[in-house]
Length: 182
Image (cartoon, rainbow, N blue to C red; front, side, top):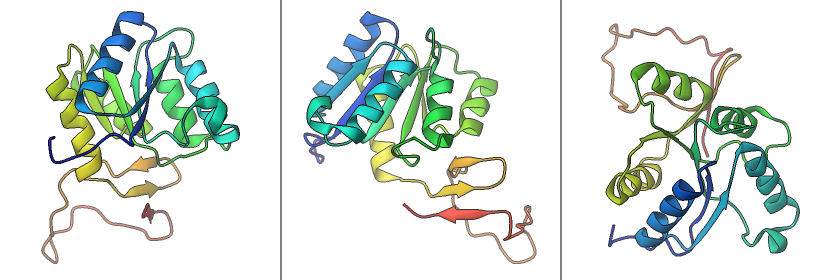
């Protein structure tokens, strides 16, 4: 990560545990992230994102480049925050990278978060290296966004392979799929 200067990066960390907020914030600063704002649940995250849009000076940052959110929080959890970011008409940036942080990173939870539009998953307990890898994944391999009648979010396929003619497993009806380039 020495090749990158994250000093101009702005991150939002949403977690209801003061310890985890402090740990994640300190870890991001250790990586070199210049501006980290922490909030204690998804509702406060929504309020902060709206504040950044309406009054960046008061918010203390011009924009949020990436969101790290704990899944299980009260009263508004990470999935509700993610749903608001990806689907709500008042969301200031539906394309923002969103890293879901969870202690329950089994396959079903990963599928559920991806289906809602999470960009990456980060399992607890995490290390600074794991956190840095997710940050680099978002920076080095940005994903195209897909918009269908049932899904809006980053393309869930990590590997973009060339499929030989006649071997296509998916049939795409171009009326129902829109690929959005950010």
